[in-house]
Length: 331
Image (cartoon, rainbow, N blue to C red; front, side, top):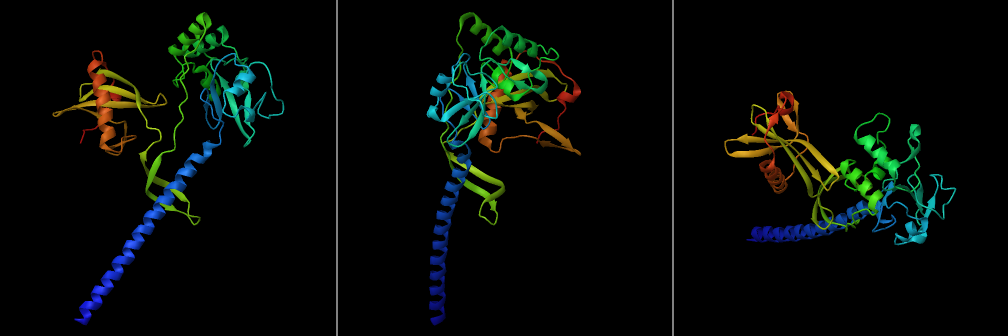
C-alpha cells in the first residue's frame, strides 16, 4: 500500500513538472516569435516612408518625370529628413530643379543612401561605365532607347538594374511594348498610370523548426509559418501554349506572381484520370526532381486551377521539339 502511494505521489509530481515545462516552453516560443518578427522587420522599418514612391534597400523608384526636388521631399512622411545629392558621395546637395535618375537621396535620421530612379528617365551620359545620369524628363530620347532595347539593337540594351527601374514605365517588372505605349501616350497626352505603393503590415508567425547558435540567434534554415497578416503571393499572369509533343505533355505554361516573379516550364500533362500540372524539373541519374514546387496541397490546387483554366482558352497546339516536351512518367 505504501509503495502504491509513493508511486502515485511521484506521478503527480512529474505531471506538475511537465505541465510547468510546457507552459514555460509556450512562453519562450511566443517570445522567440516576437524576437524573430522584430529582426525580420528591422531592416526596413527605418526607411523613409512614402505612398508615392517604392523604397527598397537600394532604390527609390516610381518617381514621376519632371518632379522638382521640393515636391520629391514632400512625398515622404518625414520629408525634412530627406536630402538629395548629385552623386553617391553626398557632397553636393541639390535643392532645386528636377530630380533625375542617377541622383541619390540620403535619409538623415539613419544615414541610409538610396539611388533615385525616375520613371522613363534612362538617358545615360556614360554607357561604358553604366553611369546613369538622366535629366528628369521623359521624351523621345527615352522612347527611342526603350524601342531599340525591345528590338534588341546592339549597344542599346537595357541591362543595369537602375536602367530597368526607370525603363519599367508601367511598373510591372518588365520592359516591353506596354512601356513603349505608355511613353507614347505620355508624350502625346501627358500623364502616367502609376500604381499606389501598399504598405505591408508585420505578419504574425510561428517558428516551426530552427537551430540556434551560442548567442541564441537562429542560424541556417529556419522554418516559419505565417498565421495572419503580411504579404501573400498572388498569381498575376498565366500563359499557356498548347503543343503537339507526341507524348503526354499537352502544353507548356508559365506563372507570374505579384508581377515580380515568374516560373517557366510548367507542363500540362495527361493521365487516365485527367489533366494535371508538372512543375519544372531536372534529371539526375534516372530520376527527375522538382526545381520549384508548392509545399502544400492548397497552393498546388490553386496553381492547377489557374493553369488548366488558361489551357481551355489556349489556341490550337503547335509542334514542339523533343527536348522541350521531355518529361518523366508522373507518379
